[in-house]
Amino acid sequence: MKKLFQSQYKLRTRIYISMLALLVSSFFFIGIFTYYNFKQQNQNYHDNRLQRKEAATLSSIAYFLEAQEPTEHNHESIYKLFEVKIFEIADIHNLDLVLYSLDGDLIISSNDEITKNDIVPVKIGEDLLKELSEKSSSIKKSLTNLGVDYLHSYQHIKDPKEKPIAIINIPYFQLDEHYKRDHQSYLVALIPIYIPLFLGASLLALLLSRQITGPMGRLSETMRKAALMKRYMPLKWNSSDEIGQLVNQYNFMVKELEKSAEILAQTEKESAWKEMAKQVAHEIKNPLTPMKLSVQLFERRLNPDDPEFHNKIKTFTTSIIEQIDSLADIASAFSDFAHLPMGNKKKINLKKITENTLSLFNNVEIKFTSTADPCYIYADKNQIIRVLNNILKNAIEAIPENKTPQINVSLEQVDENARLTIQDNGTGIDKTLQKKIFEPNFTTKNSGMGLGLAIIKQIINDLNGSIHFTSEKKSGTTFYINIPLNKN
Image 1 (cartoon, one colour):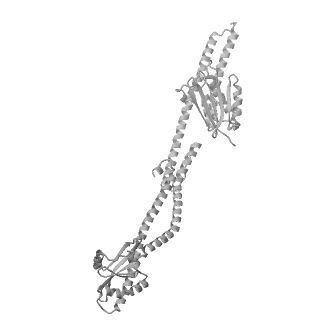
Image 2 (image 1 turned 90 degrees about the horizontal axis):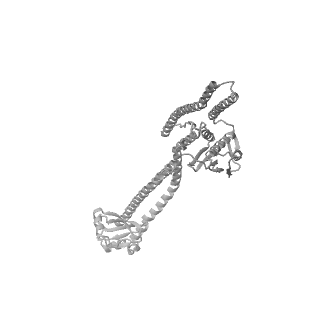
Image 3 (image 1 turned 90 degrees about the vertical axis):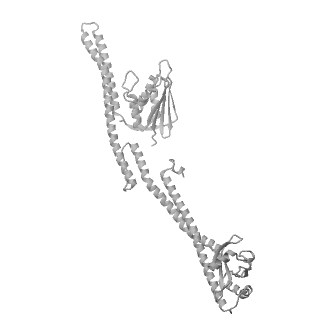
């Protein structure tokens, strides 16, 4: 029973099994009570039946004695008196009769077998004689040497003057036979009642367990859908019972959480944009400062008569153009990050796109293996190319000049996803920096805004995929990209 309530069992199962256990226990105890009650009632029935037979037998004997002439009775006279009559009375009442003297000695029996086989005692004991003298009647339950229960009644036979002249014993052997037959009949009568009752109660227990746990299952499913769809989904329950109160509390709690999440998201969004604005401002200031200094210096040194005038003009304009291009790259990167995850999504073959992209990196040797052909996903082709270009470019730049590049790219199908693995033998990423690698403004390079991996993560997340990496210092880095397959 302890294992039943452990966490690996569903609440519905625990409730259902508990109800069945309660039902079976109830049937068991009802059966025990019914058995002993039936047994007691059966005992009382046969006691009363024996008493009625005893009364009828004594009445017959009383009529018989009234027709006899009054006389003093002894052992021999009693024997002669009932020598024939006892068999007649026994046949009339379908009983065995045994007569004893007042001292407890056997006089005559209608069935010699029961005395010869010691089923009925040949002599009455002193305790029973004393009890008869006090009560004048006694019913005993005894056990034969064959293991069969039976009743026997002891009673004084009195003459017309109410004087005891003998003791009569009436054995009642139908007790066990009737009990077994009646008990069997009773059980047979109960089976058609108990089986439908048990099946109906089991079905009711199942329905009740489902009714109790059903709202919880729907609550769980609603929460799961809400988590997948990332929006609030209220749960309906048309009752004010305990489950209804739980559902109402859930709706209230989730609604409040939604408000808090919206506020938090707005705050984080504002904070991110503020941080991004600071980063953009910082990146813009970097080229503006040397541009300003160059202009001021050029203005002071400008001399049209200088023989190097045209060369200096060309050098100046080239420097300004490079700084302007840098500003344009910053603006483009910021614009791209701001517009994600927009794109023209359609069914594309990831293997073919990967092969085409790798062919452009002909300055290094890249080994590509694939176990999925074709490998269709639902995504924007240009964004996938951008993901591959960025990671491959980072992989190549991470390899020192004194080391032969070894870049391995593999594509495989894992469950319902396409897994793209890109491995390099570069310098690796320091453990203290690994948690920041996907942050928008993080970079380990001397130039750039650090938006590359942030944009990649945003693209993959928009496809309901995932990206993670493992890295060891001086051994290299491996990126793992999982994108759901398109099987339509």
